[in-house]
Structure formats: C-alpha cells, structure tokens
Length: 211
Ligand SMILES: [Zn+2]
Image (cartoon, rainbow, N blue to C red; front, top):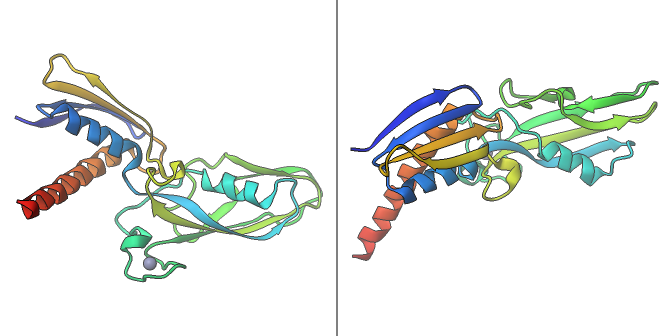
C-alpha cells in the first residue's frame, strides 16, 4: 500500500511521510519540489530611468531574485499559453512597476516599492532592499514576471530545502520541504505529486508506444 501522510505542516514548511513509495520515486518527488514546479519571477526589466550607483544589470538581477507570490490557478507558463506571443498576455505575464520619484533625502528602495498589476503576484517579502538612492537619484522600471521552473534558472526555484530521510523502516521515507514563499509548502507538495504523476503517465505512454 502506498500512502502519503502529513506529519507536520505550516505555511513555509511541511514534513510528509511516504509509505511504500520506491526510493527513486520519492527522490523524483523531492527534486520536483525543489525546482520542477512553476513559480513567478521577474524575467524582463525595462529600465526607464536609473541614476542610482547600481548598474542597470544589477537592478535587473536584484529584481529577478525576489520570490513572488504565485497563483497557479489563473496563469500558465508562456510555452503553454495560447497567445504565442513574445510579449505575453494577461494569462502568462504580470507587470510590476517601480517609480522612486525624486527625494532630497537618502533612502532605500525595497521590494515594497514595486506595485503589481495583479493583486496576488507580488513580492513575498516587502522588506528586501533593491537599491539605496542618494538625494536627487531616481529609479524607474517596468518589470515583467513570468512562470518558470528552477531547473531552467534558480530564480524560479519553489523551495529552499527539500530533503529525504529514512523513516522508521525501509518502506518509509520522510520528505521535508521548505518553500521560498511563492507557494505554501502544502501547495508545493501537492503540485509536485501531480507533476510526478503526469511525468510517469507520459513515460508509460512512451514505453507503450515502443512495444
Ligand atoms: Zn499569453
């Protein structure tokens, strides 16, 4: 009998006991939890104005590394979207704007200063520093976020930690997952199980087609 039992669960961390699941499947599930589920990350940045000391590429990199809250029910990956457009559409990309304006004091621009066109897809943590601005310096950017997977680039990783340990007998494996916050830990595991099922189904079809 195969079973999956939640031992411990919070928004950011989940511990699951897998019973009767072969080690290679448990390990595949672990890897999918880490980098095989789509999450949002900023993928394209248009710099409109940047008089900060940080180069444009530096600003773009900082923005790309911000974990963004992800809603998989309303969005699809660009490769699966029917718009077939490089620019994307409202189903496969979200625009976030940042406009520091001008100030005569020194200040730090943080992830909180990004305003998203979507009410869900926004930085998980509002207190991540992006750049410090001296009096008179300005930063204005348009940032486009898209769904992607960590196996393409680490900015799309869904978890910081996904480890597998031996349970109380050889039939049991314990999977511990800590999310980056784009999805809850429970959502990560649930989506990973679906993804693994889908991949195994596709694999079976391939094998069946060969024989
Ligand atoms: Zn689209």
